[in-house]
Length: 228
Image (cartoon, rainbow, N blue to C red; front, top):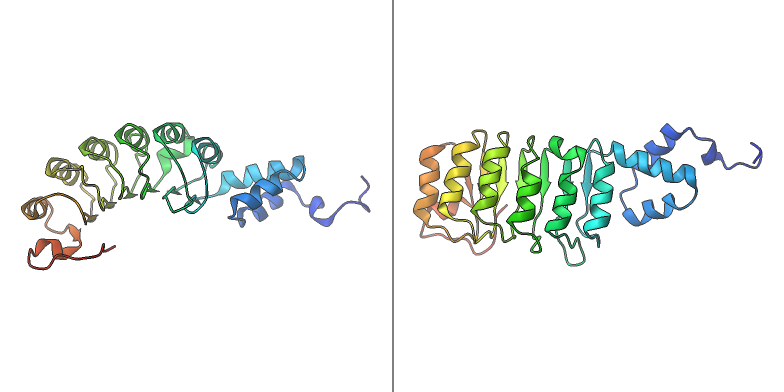
């Protein structure tokens, strides 16, 4: 096609085209853009590699589609695959596939909020490779102490942990987590089946640790709603 008949956007260099696609956050739109032509498909692929944050919350994704995108996101720092009403349906197999992505070792934030389809098997696979992790939201899942042991071993830089509603986690898991994650500043334990004395024991290990909600330390004032 001659320059006269070529669309203005098609004259853009690949680097600039990829930069434009970075600003598109709708995965449906990106998929449509990718199907326009070979150049646009390559532009979408390169834009994925530049993204530092990906959120699949609210999108109907599965193991294959989610892991495929993450594997191309080489610069990724923050990964959010929280579940919403019509959101991600990720399983342990999906977390295993995601764990093989090159970006995982550099992730500073991971949210698996409400992912009831995952177990320790998948969580451990992912967390064990996320050695740069600083912020973890694994609330509303069915993980046990096994996942906390993996966090304590693999995430020395962890600063915040949301364990809201993780009712299969015990005092032992919390103690190991707080003992090993020396940089831990805040932990959300709302809705857990752990005795009040156990939370007080965490403060003897780390007096500056912020336990959310703080009212859990006051047996006379237990919150009715989760606090973040």
